[in-house]
Length: 82
Image (cartoon, rainbow, N blue to C red; front, side, top):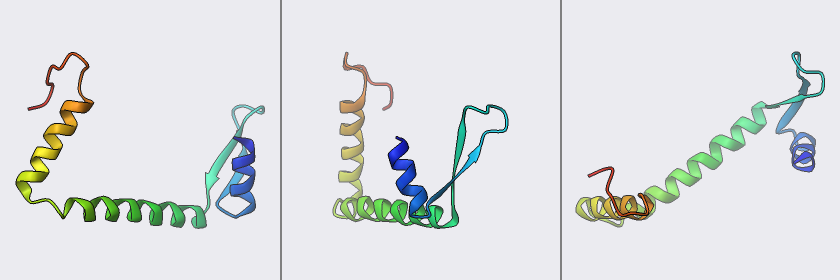
């Protein structure tokens, strides 16, 4: 993990600060540049999923959600959401 934070710090995405309540710890904070990259990635992920779902009509989207809930639900097959 340290090497990943080192790289992010070197690239200007995060800064490290000493933890004021624990001298053994270091806090890692996103910089403005890091927040911008995170926002762009979030937008790209959202637009990708949205584009895929636009291929389905509303009834198909509902069916997809129903099936995903069934797959992701309890192993015993019980349904927690209609």
